[in-house]
Image (cartoon, rainbow, N blue to C red; front, top):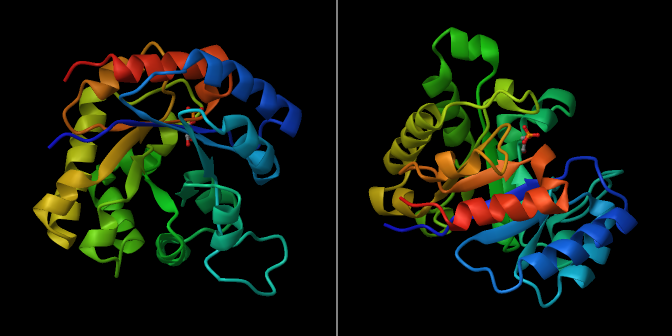
Length: 256
Ligand SMILES: O=C(CO)COP(=O)(O)O
């Protein structure tokens, strides 16, 4: 089963509108005509409209970093799925460990957000991953399994096939310490096995699972050469145009 790799930049709380436009100008030019990977930029809400315009006609796709699960309502400061689709957003990161740690995101809200996103044709990038204590206690498989089960509870197989899952070990985020490619491959293999149990093998084989955590242009090739790893969710290295281009080039030239 071949799955198109997906390289997604998670800009987190970086870049003003002007900086986002500058990035788009350089990157769209450099990546013109490049195929073989889905290229996504998950920008802050404030930069989405300008980026949509700057990316029009390019092969880059727009993503957001969070969404609320309600259609609309009295939720001060929140953004609904329909507000995102109206802006041309195609992907949305859900359940990033920073949101779980700092903004009270739970397995339950992740699941609600997944349902709300799918209903509005937004493709969720669902983040799962263990922290250092859990890894050292040998709980990695259990944690990713529980988070995956909770995130997709009640999602039908035909809808689930569209999902993207990002395995991001928390201890590898922004630390310069990446998981080894073999290790990430094993955990991602376990996530796929979990998906096969919950859904079915064919659907599990279609779901793309990324690795995230200190991915750079010079190590992305190792990760993508692994049988189970279908892309990367990248923070720091996705912010600099040359580096983003390097990530995509590293992904499309990988050999499986
Ligand atoms: O959190 C991440 C992507 O969502 C990873 O961040 P870094 O690539 O900066 O380690």
